[in-house]
Each structure stands twice: as structure tokens, then as C-alpha cells.
Image 1 (cartoon, helix red, strand yellow):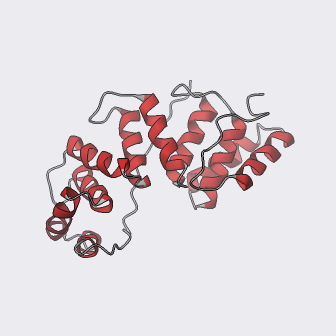
Image 2 (cartoon, rainbow, N blue to C red):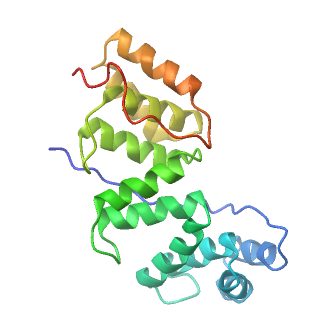
Image 3 (spheres, rainbow, N blue to C red):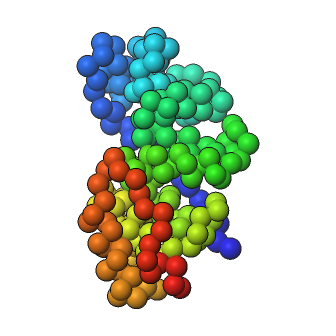
Amino acid sequence: MKKLFVAITFALGLQASAVAGFTEGANAYNARNYALALKEVTPLAKKGHADAQHLLGLMYYMGRGVTRDYKQALTWHRKAALQGKSDAQYVVGAMYYTGNAVPQDQKAAVSWFRKAAEQGHADAQHALGLMYRYHVAGMPQDMVLAYMLWNLAAASGNANAVEQRAAITRHMTQEQIEEGQAMSRMWRPGTPLPTQSRTGSNT
């Protein structure tokens, strides 16, 4: 069985926020002034600001401005994830998948990846596609769903998804490819992703 490796990737160009202090904190982080970033975002994170929670979780995960602490990283990312922050949902999913700071739980990983993917998170879509392709984490093998997810992720600029989509196409029938393309066109961010296809399990 092929192993699934989920690489946690972070977008360093953080979005600005209207909340006072977060813009300064994000700018300081991007300028590698981690001490100032920590000073600005910590109070906001404690008040429940999802972007600040995600950034603080990232700082703990990477050991930037603080001592690296995966448990703290998970705590802050989970707080942001529960508020619907897709980047944080993806990180929580990856930490459950790898068993980083928590007992390994593939079912929980799939749940968090799906939440992020359904918001249009390309890395989460890529990860779910791998799970469908290689029948891991309790997911059924379904090449059409894998193709669909990689098609969506590729449209958002995920280079790994572009490569995976090209590779899987060589093992698919024209009917399967057309179904995957149709499913990609029909799906919209913010709506549930399909859990089965009509032709994808025919390998």
C-alpha cells in the first residue's frame, strides 16, 4: 500500500484584517519581526480572533518568536478551525493524520480536511484526493473523486495536484475523466463535496 504523506504548507502572505493590531502583527510576522508579531496577535487570539489564533498557532508550530510547541500550535489552530478558518482546519487535519501532538486519528483528519476542502482550500483538496486515490484513512478508492479534487486544487494553483491529475488520467477511461470534469464544474465552494461517483470505483 502506498503511504500518504501530507506536507503542511503555510501561506506567509497573511491577509490584512480590520481588527486593530492584527494588520500590524501580520506585517511584523511577514517582516520576520516575530517579537512584535507575538505582542500584537496574542491578545487578539485570546479574545477569539480566528486569524490571530491561526497566526499564533503557526508561530508555535514553526518556533518563530516562541519556543516550538506543537501542543500549543494545535490548541490555537483548533480554536481558529472551530470558527471556520480553512487554513487552520487543514493544519489540524494534518496534525491528526501524522499524530503530531495528538494521538493519530485518520477519521478526524479526514473530517478536518473535508471541512477545509469544502471551503475551497487547495491543499486540503489535494490531500483528500490522495486518500481517495490510494484508499487510505478509511476512504473508498475512487479515481473520479480523486480527479475531481485534484482538478479543483489545480485550478487554485496547487502544483502537486496538477502532477497527480496528469498521472491518474493515464489510468482512467474517457467516461471517468468526463465525469470528473463535470463534477468539478458543478461544485461550488461552501457546498458539500460528493462522497461517491458513478464510475470512479471501476479500476
